[in-house]
Length: 103
Image (cartoon, rainbow, N blue to C red; front, side, top):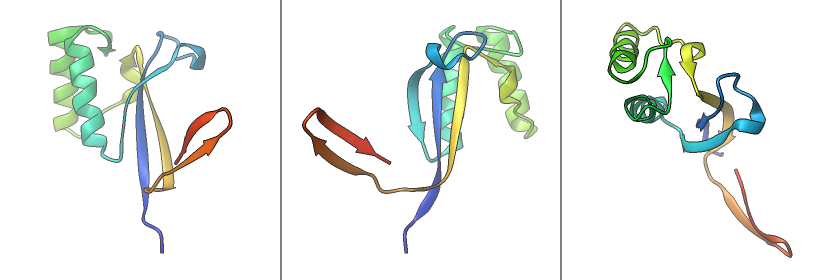
């Protein structure tokens, strides 16, 4: 029996969340780790929350986190993709074009 889990990937992106603008920042099976990384990105000025930057954005994000009402649609310049029921074990395969990681 395989161990299945949800994988979250945090991306930086433009304010319209276009796929062509996305660059992965971190992937984790823990949404708490993703939230910690979002706070770092807000603190550094790379992302906004509820249109608020840095200190105000962190304060709003922490308030919503404490009240269990995080709304990721209010995250500007960031996007979270969620993959449910994925195998937690990955396999690395070689090909003539290079190494690929299958999750």
